[in-house]
Amino acid sequence: MMNGQRAGPAVYAGLLLSLFGIGWLMCGDGTWTPRHMLHNIRQNPLSYTLAFSGAIVWALYCNVTRKYAGGKNGVAMFFLATFLLLWLKYGLSQDATMIFTSRIILQLLVTSAIMGTAYAAWNIGIIQGNMTLLATASYFTPVLSAAFASLWLGVALTPAFWQGVVMVCAGSLICWWFTRRA
Image (cartoon, rainbow, N blue to C red; front, side):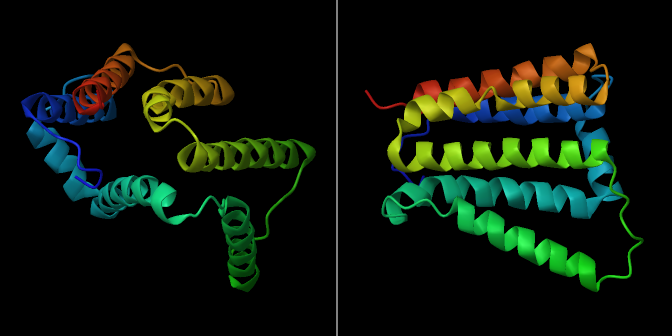
């Protein structure tokens, strides 16, 4: 809608396939039903509301950044502000003291470097890159993210999870295919 791209029946089919895939992978055993999903939403409405809101905000951000950023990348400033505010919040809270070990510090540094690099690269791609290529490659982010998390945490992901990931990626690619410019 924001970029004036057409959205015919195939786009809506791709969207539904992606949403069904999300429901499928969230159920774990692959027995997704609308009733089951509604039950999950009622059990934890805040999580689902935040996830949905985050998806909308991310989509808006990705669509307006190139238009209004003026070629400038604000990711470093965003991360610095986030870093300072979160440590300030922790310092003012009554939470238990954190325990820093060499393993925890290493994980903190590695994840910080990965996240910072990823966000900076994404923002550069949005501002200066080929949006079609960036969007297409981003459809596989859930696959790579889940695989990395599975290895990092030593958790085996179920076949139903991977089926859901395939549905999300296929639905996204259908949407891309039918909204791409000639």
